[in-house]
Length: 456
Image (cartoon, rainbow, N blue to C red; front, side):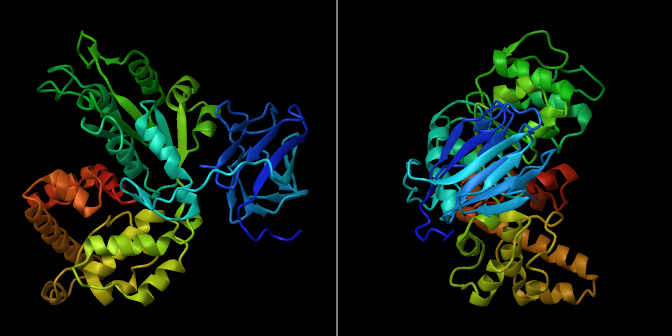
């Protein structure tokens, strides 16, 4: 069958065999997010076949074809009898999952919603169809106060989207607090969430508010919620349902007015099925869901993002080399937008020296850096005859100190404005500011927290 030339075709899914025979689902060409197919009641196309996983398939329209991805299902996915992990469909195929068969057809009934003309949303940047489909949904979610689950691979910009939803919504004047479930020791998670009273446990020398109280009147992002211990999930559910918390060692319940956003790299449907995540908490949080696409599915955005990051981090008038852009666009970016940011920032900081490892280098240990370091600084560090990893680390440290000092000077010492001008999340900028002021490298939890502050 010939591939449609316009790229504006919709598709129809129709169950031809299985418990849901006769059920249909229309996918317009500009559907705002990936269609989830599976047993989960929160799936876009829910099925009642017990052999189908809770979240079995993800399907979206890509350049006039239907892109299908098996989401780690137990029984697998077959297209025309062939087992697949990912596939591009033209229409006319048969999908088999569990005991269910689904016929795929091009559809004239799938009404198209025009793509947004925007090139970004808040701090999010992107002009690809995959992103422009999301912007109308983002605008509606920003205006709402319902909980939202933000899903996506590591490095896709989930925290930046959460901050954008806050800043573009009615609670923008209130606080934006972040709790990272992986950055706090397990024995301190409850205290960090709900606070504690003085003397409530060894080391509690003073009373402390938790993040729910800190976010009162604003927004709380619970990052990597899929990693939260299941015993604490019950207490979190109560806080969400009753809008009140009680500090460890406290007797009084404290009312809180907080909009909760949750981000995760995990498949929460699978976590629920495995008994590692409470289904009642999942349904309480997943009133709305939005999935950020990986960078490999954002056609045309690599060059746009790279030039955006370059302008934000390089000296005025310092042009981005076109051969560097071409190399960036030829790479698959498994680390997504965060990895791209780090590669651009290293090239800015190190110049041609950064070409040795700017693309495809591991990013987790270094985190994003910005702007150019002076040639004299490079010469001094090279003169020390240090091993390559330590020389690179010293150069990045020197650059961070100069960058933070410069951007704070330009914004009168205001951290919030300096963070916004830097194009990074406030939490990361605050960590960076504290580190450069003290001359210390961050603890492991802080290092991980800062790495998610990049644009996405």
